[in-house]
Length: 586
Image (cartoon, rainbow, N blue to C red; front, side, top):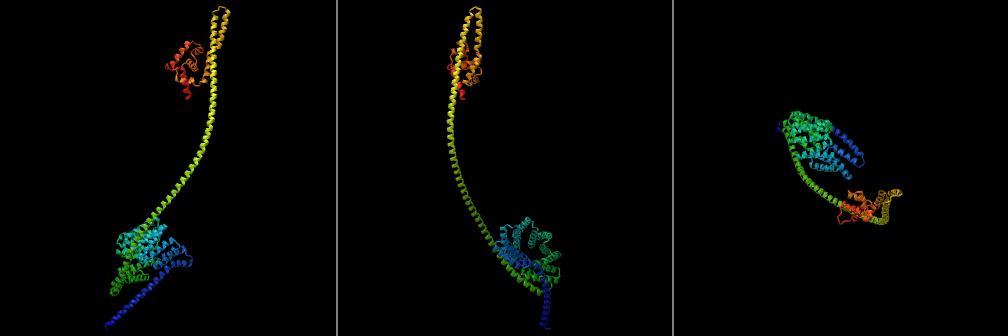
């Protein structure tokens, strides 16, 4: 045979074998996709039917659109974006903020799934702002988690961890254990990329346990997948195989296209490393097929890399070269795309930072304007209040002044009338008192004169009796005895002094009390002399009343002066008058 015939037969045999393999793989893909198609359309078709039969354009329709978009997250990112944008448009038209927040999140996560990270970040930031505005804590926490996922893919690990930790704190406060587990899975994935396997293992193990407790299939599948990758890094093939196999089974149940594609290629890698090359080829080709259908470029690149290594192990350099060539071409295009995304991200970050600064500046200005307006409003209110108070106080004062003037006038009139009446009454009382005093003084004077006359008569009678006593006649003695008896009966000096004292006290009330309070050593006889002196009687009149001689009366006055402690210049009468006046003033 010629060289060309041999070459032609070898090529024909190779192409025939290749067509056979492709046919087998295509049949398997058709079966798998048919199964997935049936599983994934069940719930979505039900929601789509509800949407188609619902005619109103209200919040219920928005919620249906968002729910369908959410269900497409792990099935078809393009459809997820479509329904999310429909929900966003209707929400903005109706002003339904909760619908806007969720729609932005649905679209953002769908763009993240496609690897369009800058656009994803834009929608997620919009979602975060709206959730913040409506104070939806659960929505805020979920959006923080999604933003962390975008930053993790951008290799901005510090920012990603910051958002993850904030999300964990908020989920903890809300008691959302399942969401905490999902965040743990994302942190574990990020730590694997940073080659921090021990920390990653702790987070992923906790996440798997928490998802298992909650029975969250997607979370369990994701945790198993990441643990498989971790154990593959550690070259623990059996552990890696167990977790990837488990994740693949669970992913099939929930139609997780993204996770299933990744698991198929990783499983192929594990089988390749275990030298189970035929099985490895089947799994990798399954993954490649799904990656192409769903535009999952990173998994397509991963599949080409694994197929290149697989063909090298199978000692098929020509095929290895073909896959290597595809790998390089896709890698370069993805590299350029990644660079473009990073540049776009940096531009977006700068723009976002600029907008944030402008927003902060505007908010500060708004706060200042609000404060100024508030101060002005308060000032106006205060001025109005002060003006009102001043007016009310002035009016009240005027009213009170008028009332006070009226009352003062009335009081003055009443006081004048009362004063007039009191003056009249006082004059009447004084007139009565003067009349009474004059009467008592007249009575006292009359009594004093009678007292004097009586004593004079008695003294004359006593003298007569003395003359009769000189007679010796018995009849005269009897007559004298009877006469003396009559005289003793009529004199009644003590009784007369009692009556005199009573009349004197009525005319000069408190005289004796004041005198005794200042001169405690005065005797009863001294008080008699004081009362006679106060009546301005001379010595002879005093002697007659007291029944003593004028000399004895002078002696009694002298002794009284000493007891009253008067100077030679002071008169007893003047002193007694002053003493009585002091009593009246007091």
